Image (cartoon, rainbow, N blue to C red; front, side, top):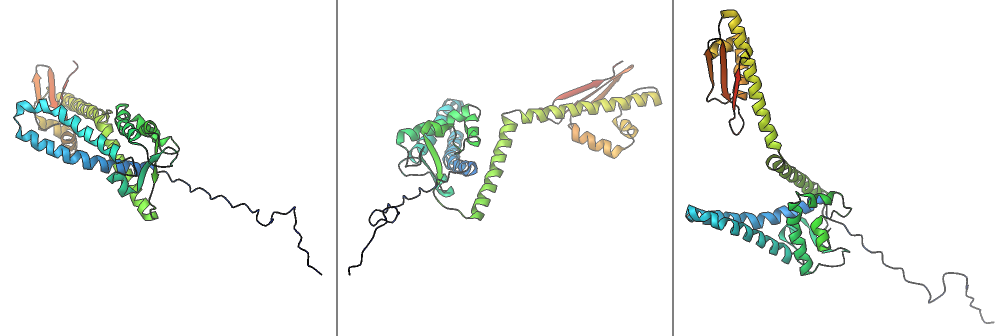
Length: 287
């Protein structure tokens, strides 16, 4: 008797009809802000530092009267070199030295491949647009879920990780990046956004307050001895703590142009603050 072969038409195991499972697309790992910052810092350094050093040597050899005429063209030329470097090495499966060391690369917005030369050029110019907007173009990377800045949007690009890093390497990389990012932020705050001006104003204010304290000592001297004095040491002794008084003075006043003038029933104390400009501060009795 022939053995029958039955097929369950309701089952999923019909011979020859099993559909192959689709391969799960590999998840794209986008470069972090710290990784991108480190790569940019390296690329900036290898272009700007050598060229600026060469420019300085050339300027030293030129007559002083001609340096001003060449300064702007040289600065523009250095920035053009940087734009070309970023353009050429951010397209066509190429990476800049900084990105190669960090293990990241620029790709199309959908991470399907490298961007074109034209897109790469727009992206490089975008660095300067972001900088011209007081850095706001770079700040957008902190908001975007793929850490894209304004220049990425102009170039239709994303920056992805192309090399797996160990946990220790990632920790070291981020520590260095955070330290450098903090250092640059501190520099910008001091030199562009008024941080240093605030501290300079504080130094002038502290100098003025110290002169007011000296004015109180002058008043104490007059009550005790019947007149004001031009003798600084007598005021120091009246302070009650000459050592601390001298420390405060050295901290808040410059060591030059300090003088006390007395005439009839008035006095005037003139000194210089310890700010960068050595601002002159004056205090006189209000009578």
